[in-house]
Every structure is written in structure tokens, then in C-alpha cells.
Amino acid sequence: AADKIDTIVSLSKRRGFVYPCSEIYGGQKAAWDYGPLGVEMKENLKRQWWRYMVTSREDVVGIDSSVILAPDVWVASGHVATFSDPLTECTSCHKRYRADHLEEAYEEKHGKPPVNGLADLNCPNCGNKGTFTEPKQFSGLLSTHLGPTQDSGSVAYLRPETAQGIFTNFGQVLQTSRKKPPFGIAQMGKSFRNEITPGNFIFRTREFEQMEMEFFVKPGEDEEWQQYWMDQRWNWYTDLGMREENMRWFEHPKEKLSHYSKRTADIEYRFRFGGSEWGELEGVANRTDYDLKAHSEASGTDLHYHDQEAQERWTPYVIEPAAGVGRAMLAFLLDAYVEDEAPNAKGVMEKRTVMRLDHRLAPVKAAVLPLSRNAQLSPKAKGLAADLRKNWNIEFDDAGAIGRRYRRQDEIGTPFCVTVDFDTLDDNAVTVRERDTMKQERVSLDQIQAYLGARLLG
Ligand code: ATP
Image 1: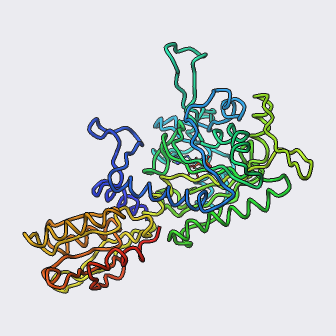
Image 2: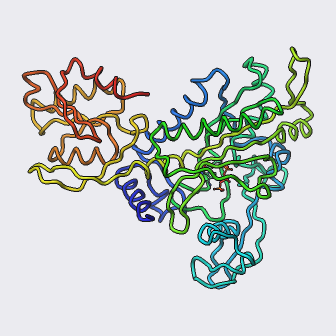
Image 3: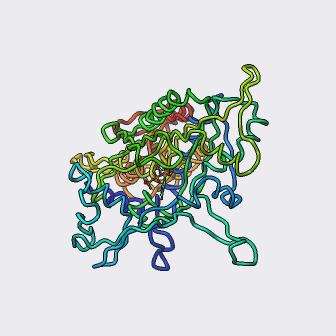
């Protein structure tokens, strides 16, 4: 239920995954900072995406373009003219909303769209009906000024998607990478949107990270490739442990497609926000040849592909899987959060919280725990932790009862706890406890690297 989100928000803050931004100044609305555990998990997630989408494939390469591109890029792409959302305001309580979101929430609840549009809807804040103003288009582009003057000539935009940096570099990558369609160019990085209603924790923020890939194909082969990438992207989430019962496809109705799209299908996750059950996790769009053609025309540089063998020239169609890092992280956290039971020191079953994150995503891979803080055990355990740190992110913790220390690691998803006890001093072995099964195994110190290495993939 909705309170699971609240649980994740408070756990995130308490344990150092995600903090409210600028909290000492009272906070910056709907902005979040990633803490020590959050940054590890976020980097793991991005690494997994990059491996799956780029380095494990021979047909995809990466780039890292600027956040601020030439303003003309955004004129040609259509963003300056059309990247906007319909803004409405409740005339009773003055809360602002995206009109399309209000209508979608109604449709999800009632199974049909509101017959009279906004006039049928109650304000989610004050409950009044029919109090919404006529929607006005509100630009989602965040702009700034470059240089010492602040006039229209110095205006620049913070990118609302990473994709355009890929399109503008298409010709150069084609020349220098020796790839030819079908091939892709991927990019991860920050994007910015002046969202009307940011919120739901890290689901919708004005500053966020995207992981996008533009896959260039021959016109006519686009539909097949879209299906291919839809399957690939679904599998990426499930392979990293996301439960399929919490995922579904949403097919964008034709009349609501973005200006560049022939077909868009979203992977949705059951976020269970108050008000709506499902939320977009990522979109897989067929952007056709819209962007390359628009940039060819506006820039005067023809961004086509010349197939020398077939003696053909064509502008590729583009299939784009576009994911958000924050949304993926939130979905993986929600999906992994489980409450079960574990025996306490007296053997009595107690509630425990465990984050069953895939090992590849877990921020800490193993915790080294001396059984107690002791002049012999602690240095031995510290030495072991230092050794393991050459390969993994390792925590060392010798404060408090061992059971409580296990609980702390379970709660942040650490796959293994390695306990150094008094027997270790004699037998040179440690006890390894696995997070989900809580099974314990004795492993000799000269085998511990190999033991963990075999179990911690990626
Ligand atoms: P929404 O309909 O939720 O506003 P969108 O359809 O505009 O999203 P896309 O333009 O398809 O989103 O962006 C691709 C991905 O980037 C989204 O699936 C999401 O994961 C991520 N994303 C987009 N906007 C935001 C945001 N404001 N905050 C966090 N992530 C975002």
C-alpha cells in the first residue's frame, strides 16, 4: 500500500540512501540528494545498464554529451514549441495540477475517461468539484543565460532529455566508430524539466538522471526492432530481480503520442502511490526519422546513412528505450523490501526487515563483523575487511550485539555478513551468513575471496 513508499522514504533517510535536499535550510521542494548507500546503489544500477546496453554488445557504443547544447537544437527538435504540459489550477484552493494527470487518475479509478473533462473531477486537495481553470500550456524547458548579459540572445536550455545530444553527434559517431545501422548510441546523464507537479519521492523531480539509447535502423525494419528492444528492456528489470507481477506494459494511444513518435510502449511499475497504482518506469519509443530529418534540415548537415553496398541513401528510423535512474532505483527498493522473521539471540522469532536486492545492485556487498569488540578479534577483522575492499564495497562494524548488526545489514540489503569469532584465531576460518536464507557456513580465510567472488556476480 501507499505506506510502503513512506517506509522506503524514511528508511532511505535513516540509513543514507536518499536525503531531502538542502534540509538544513528547510528543504528544497521535491529535490533529493543521494547519500553514501544511495550513491553506491545508483552507480551499480547505471553500471548494469551500461554493461547490458553497451559494453556487452557489438552494435552499441556510448557517448557523453553536454547538458547545455546549442539552443537551435531545441528549436529543431520541436521542444521549444511543443515541450509543454497542460497546467490547471483549482480556483478554490489554488493548487496546481497537470490536467492530463488528473484525467488519467480518474480513468484508472473509473475505468473510463471523464465525459466532461475537468468539469467532472474533484480536486484531490480540497475535494471541490468542477473548480479547475481551463488548462494552459506550460513549458517544461528549464532555461538559463550564458555569459554576462541576460537577454533573449543569451538564453540557453538545460536538456530535458539526453537523446538530442545523441542525434547531433550521429554523423560523427557514424564516421569514427565504423558502425553501421542497425546500431545504437547510448548515453546516461542528468536531464532537467520544469515539472508542474514534482513529487512522489524520487519518481518525479526537476533534476534527474536518464539512461537512454537511440538505435538506428533501416526504415521498414523499425517495428521489429521496437519489439526486440521492448523484450530486452523487460528482461533487464526481471533479470535484476524485479517481480513481473509488479510490472506491466502500457501502450500509448495513437492520439496521445508525442510529436515524433509512431508507437510508444511504457514499462510500468506498481509503485502504489496514493491516487494511482501504476507509474511509468521507462518508455520504448519509435521516434521514426523525425529527429535526424529535423536536424538535417535545420543545420544544413545531412544526417543520412549511405549504404555503399546497396547503393542506397536513407535516414535511419530510431528506436529509443529511455529509462530514469531514480525511478528504477525506487522500483527496485520497493520490490526488494520484505518483512519476515528471524530468531533473536534467545532463539525467539522476531520481525526483521530485509532488502532482497540483487547482489549486483546491493550498495554493500559484505559486512565484516568481529563477534565482539576485542583486542584480538577487531584487528583481525579489520585486516580482512581491508583485503576484501580491494574487490568490493565492504562495511566493518563492531558496535553492539551481533544480532543487531545482522539486522542493520539485512535492512540495507547486504548479501553477506562475515563474522570473525574466537575460533577464527585457531582455525583461520570465518562464519559467512547469507542474507535471505540466514544460513551460516564456515569458510576458511584463504578461501573467502573465492567464496564471495563466486557468489557476487557483476
Ligand atoms: P511522465 O509521463 O511520467 O512525465 P515522460 O513520458 O515524460 O514521463 P519520458 O520523456 O519518456 O518521460 O522520459 C523517459 C524516462 O525518464 C521516464 O520513463 C522516466 O523514467 C524518466 N523521467 C522522465 N521525467 C522524469 C522526472 N521528472 N523525474 C524523474 N524521472 C523522470
